[in-house]
Length: 274
Length: 274
Image (tube, rainbow over all chains, first blue to last red; front, side, top):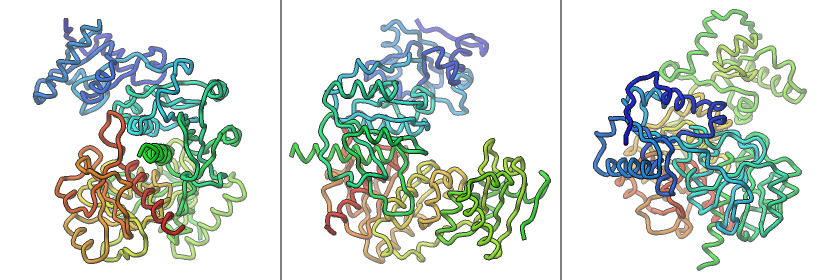
C-alpha cells in the first residue's frame, strides 16, 4: 500500500527534514539518499530504504525511469518498507533544496564492525584518518568503487559518512563500499591479526610510489586534509612512499592522492596478470 | 602608508564584500584571495594585490607569519598598491565568514589570451570543458601545479576561475598556473597551429590509458562533470583512452580522472629520463 501525505505538518515530513541535521541524524540512526540513480545503485546492491518518498512529478519521467521507480516501489513494499507519495512542494521541504529529486529514501546507517570485514574480499582498502570534508569522503568512496576496493575504514574524528553531502558526492558508491568507524589502536590491532600491507604517503618518504611492489590486501592510509598523517601513524606503516610534487605545493587533495595510489595498485595487478 | 578603516560603512568594505558575488565580481574584474598562505604563494609567483587588507588580529601570529605579513605589506606598497588595516569584525564582514583569515587581497583577474600561451613551456596542459564545480576547478589547478602542468584552458560554459570557492580550493595554485577562457573552435584552431597531442578519456575508448605513449605538449581534455565530453569533441582528439572502472560506477570525479591521467604522463616522462 502506498500512503499519501498532503500536509506540510505531517510528522514524517518533520522527521525526514530533521535527518539533514547532524545531531538528529546520528540519534535517529538513519540517513537520506536522494535521486533515482543513487537509490537504484542501492537497490542493485541489495539495499532498500525503510521509507521511500516519491513526488507526483516523477510521472513525467521517461519510460526507463518509470520502470526504475516501479522496481523501487515494489521491492521496498515487498521488503516491508513504507512507500509515501507526496507533492513536489512537500518533497522540496523534506529535501531542503529548490530543485529536489523526485525520489528520496530513508536508510538505516549501514556501517559495519571491523571484525565483520573479510579483508581477503578485496585487494585494496582505504583507511581515512581524520578526514573532515564530506566531498572528499564521497569522492573516496567513488574511487573505491572504481578501483575495486572493499571499503573505507574511518579512524579518528572523521566526517559523518552518512551526511547528505557525503552520500551525494559518493554518487551511490556508499552502498557498494563497506564502511567502518573505529579508532587507530583498534584498527592496528585488527590489521596485524592477518595479512596486510599498510601503505602511507608522506613528505618524509624517500621512495617514489611506483617503486614498491604492492600485495593484497593493500591498506592505503590517507591523512587529514590539513595536517597529513601523524608521525606515529607513518611509523606504523609497512611502506611509506611519496607522490612526486613537481610544483610549489607540497601536497595533493586527499582524495586525489588516494586515487593516484589506488590506480598504481590496480596497474601493478594488471601487469602481473598479463 | 597604511590606511586604517574603522567603519563598517566605508565604501571599500562594501566593494570588497561585493566581490563575493559573481555579477559584481565579473563587472569589477577583480577577485579576492584570503589567507597568509595563499597570498604568499601569489607573492612568490610575483603577483601582488592591488589592495591588501589586514586585521589587527594578525599581530598575535608567530614570528615566521609576522615576517610573511611584513613582506606582503612592503612589497604591495612598493608596487603602488594600497594597504588597509582594520578590525577583525570588519574583516569578517568583508570576507563573509565567521572565522576569517587575518589577511585578504584584491587581485585583478589574471587570465591570459590563448595567443599569449607558450605551449612549449610545459609538458602538460589541462583543457576543461564546461567544468561547473568550483571545487573541481580549484583541485584541477592544484593538480596542475603538482604535475608540472602549464595551466588550464577553459572552454564552453565553465565556472568562474576567480570565484572565492575556486581560489580557496586551488590553495594558491591559481597563481602558478596560466588560465585561459576561450571557446572550443578557437581552442582547436590554436591547437593545430603547433605541436600538440590532444587526449580525451571516453567510455567509447578501447585502449587503456597506460597504452599510448604521450608526448609533450600533452593536452588533457576533461569533460563536464555530469555529461562527459560531447562526441564531436572526442572525435577531435588525437588519442582516446579509458581509465579502468572495476566497479559499478561508469566514471570518476572530473578532477580525480585528470590527476590519474596527468600522473601517467609524469610517470612516462620519468621512465624516459631514467
